[in-house]
Image (cartoon, rainbow, N blue to C red):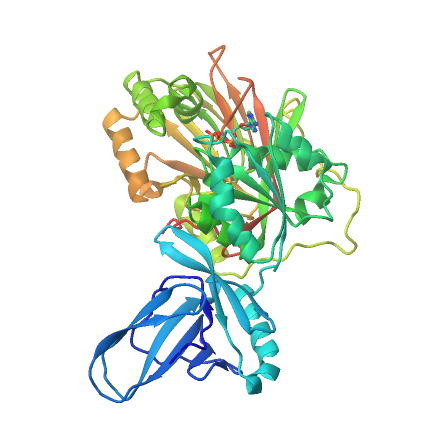
Amino acid sequence: MISDTVDDHSSSEGGVGSDVKSYQTIDPSTLDVGDHTSLILAASSLLIIVKLSFPTNTPFTLCVRLMGCGSIWVSLTTGNPETKASREIPFYNVLWADLSQAGIIIDYAQNTSKNSVSAASLRYVINHDQRPRAGTWIARLIDLAYGNAQRSKRLKVLINPFSGKSNATNLYHQYAEPIFAAAHCAIDVESTGCSGHAAEIAEHIDIDAYDVIVACSGDGLPYEILNGLARKPNAAVALSKVAIAQIPCGSGNAMAWNLCGTGSVSLAALAIVKGLKTQLDLASITQGNLRTLSFLSQSFGIVAESDLGTEDIRWMGPARFTYGFLVRLLRKSVYPCDLAFKVEIDGKADIKNHYLSHAGNPPESRSTNGAEPQLSGLPPLKYGTVRDDIPQDWEIISFDKLSSFYAGNMAYMSENANFFPAALPSDGLLDVVTVDGTISRRTYLSMMKKLENETLFDAPEFKVRKVSGYRLIPRDRVDGYISIDGEKVPFEPFQVEVHKGLGTVLSKSGHLYEAKGPI
Ligand SMILES: Nc1ncnc2c1ncn2[C@@H]1O[C@H](COP(=O)(O)OP(=O)(O)OP(=O)(O)O)[C@@H](O)[C@H]1O
């Protein structure tokens, strides 16, 4: 029987009892463990084949008791004298593998539902004759599990205990940390004590001691971390060396949706473990005498008002945004302003072509121009600040009846809101959308529907430009809302300049967001 499977800290993973398919194997692909089990490195997954011998050809179901804990049910339907049960673990889910005196241990992220994984492990006795091969086989498994992703990342984890429903601490410890630990990450956890604390930690962090700063929060903490790193004397080096990642624990978790394709804590933890270092454009915002960095978006008009102007009805949850939006729509509110753009790509066909050519290319590697500078702050501003004259070659448009101005560096602005499908992590451009306030309410509502269906990009009322810089000057109002990455900033003119690939994040693809493109 298969008692040589000494321990399995899991319930059944998809594939137990299923027919054995034919797999293209990779050499040296197979490791025999015990008398009856083979571990096979298949094309994209680890395949576990258990061979069972039975005297009769009667179909039946067998409960296999595993030493240590648990058992698995194996349905044997063929009734052949020798039957095989297979189990398949995608390499993406494999976290680690080790050889010990007792045998081989494989740690993996077991699918517990469509939206969650939990750390589990498999243990097998290694046959004496297989021991010399086992080390090489394990090294091969880890290579396949990680590909180009860095292994054993050193994580500085920052938890905002008041994020979202104030349960970020529990969410992290229950669903993320076990995945990080099983993947042999080095973990250093700290909770933020007040607003601004994460920026302070990032400003003083030793950039040689950590690979990633992980924010267990909404999008507010990554924004603080980014601006903390930007205050370092060697800001450019820090921003390229240390990646910023998010475990989604807040009310808005756009970073995780864009880079990990999920709002699930455990799946985001797995995506961070397997994440590829990815360059991210960052935008300098100058307003008054201040210069800050933005990674996500800037908004003015109905979107900013519906978000920041509804803080008093936070109890409504995400519905507060829709409520705020509809109230302003009924009032037919408009937001006059002057805009100046450095337009790089205009027209939807050209924007789509630009997206497709980037999507088809492999990830770019960061150019270091020879020796890496050890002390270089933020890059100089080639377009100057909001206090300088508008550059000569910028297009200036005066909007008397603007409804919405929205500039996006990422595709999703929140779950299911793929507002900027053509956004790319490091094309050096922001996608800027303007919507005129003279369109009918019915058209506006149909645009909301199109946002849900991911067809908004092609709506004629949805004007899109790709720009490398712009200035926005609010008009005819003394007060209102301007949002930078979801944070309220003064109701004053501001100028934006994109820095190509200045920041670093972890993504699944290495060069694209986890959103449907503008096709
Ligand atoms: N200990 C703390 N006490 C109070 N505020 C904090 C603390 N730690 C961080 N903050 C602040 O909370 C703000 C929101 O944080 P977070 O990123 O977790 O988003 P959130 O709670 O989900 O809210 P939202 O996504 O709606 O912005 C941040 O701007 C940060 O400055």
